[in-house]
Image 1 (spheres, rainbow, N blue to C red):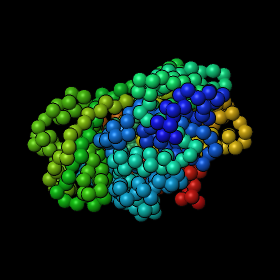
Image 2 (image 1 turned 135 degrees about the vertical axis):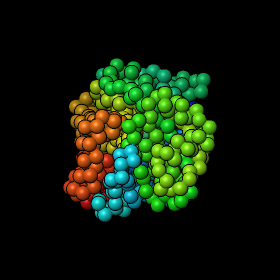
Image 3 (image 1 turned 180 degrees about the vertical axis):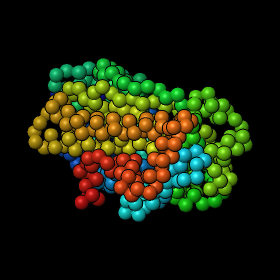
Image 4 (image 1 turned 60 degrees about the horizontal axis):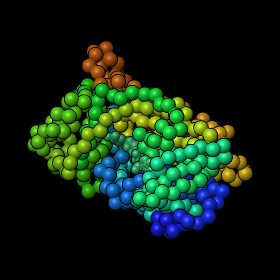
Length: 417
Ligand SMILES: Cc1cc2nc3c(=O)[nH]c(=O)nc-3n(C[C@H](O)[C@H](O)[C@H](O)COP(=O)(O)OP(=O)(O)OC[C@H]3O[C@@H](n4cnc5c(N)ncnc54)[C@H](O)[C@@H]3O)c2cc1C
């Protein structure tokens, strides 16, 4: 249902429930859940505060894991996404300027890619387009959720539509409203974690030589530095450094910034040319104490955040969305109340521990490499040496990094069978 049609129903008589599921947050994670529920028989509403044009312009790019691609394939959007993104055929890991490099190749997994790299819009737009074809999903945008009230059998949600207010009632509320989730805070769910001593600089560059679909992750004592291939021989830089250093780096003029960049990444692709602005992000590790309480489930950054090393955050959120859709659909099919805590706990048991493992892994990587203590330098270089030569270790690390280590959702099953 379009927003105009929805506004016309403002004065229509209230049903017991307006929707079975209300998803707050139309980022990639919220959209993935809404699309994954398209054949569930459940009445779904997706509520996003930012207008379409603003949401699509987010200058972000992501490493997208194989499992996320298979989930998008199961949803039916992968054929629209794939032509617009880069397929990474080689990933190189190295410790600062130590010459021993770990090279992950396609033959290590026997798959068509090791990882994909996608700009925000390349993922967002196909998901938004698919929603327009889902009769059971209403997409309210730009509409802001301003208040929630929990009752034993449902949730009342106060909406702000321009200058008008409206209340809707749902059996289940899903928070996909990002790291600063107000839905999580209003529900009184506490979080644990910390801000890192580092900030992250992101930028797009155009290299002189072809990037050859290769991603590089170089671990410097100041923080990890990644350069990811994009279509059109462009690249995405994700550069972590202590706060003050990061602030000083983004403040440099283009020429000096590029000189610093060249020092960090080496000269594999020749000279780099900057494309557009550079941005700086704070970096945190966060895990919510609960992913579910009666009538509420958290997914994506609303539930957890991690260090950008290894490009895990969005991928975890996509897996949350696929897992929650599966749990809700099967509960609905067996006649259970989808907002009941017993049902929602199945999702929490599935995802919380798996996400915690990834949070621990990214934290471990950042701490062990962002360090110049000699015994640790020796141990990690030995670790990289073994990673390159001991095949089972290499495959294990690759599976962990590409999301293949955990329990796959049924949406990805077509590929896995
Ligand atoms: C520098 C950096 C690099 C990264 N690189 C990668 C990577 O390579 N790979 C990867 O997997 N992850 C990466 N991540 C992590 C990734 O960006 C996040 O995990 C992901 O964007 C979270 O998506 P989300 O949909 O959960 O939240 P968001 O993208 O934050 O979406 C939340 C949405 O909710 C809406 N909203 C909020 N409140 C309300 C409200 N009250 N009413 C209505 N709508 C509301 C917002 O407008 C927003 O659109 C990176 C992060 C950083 C900082």
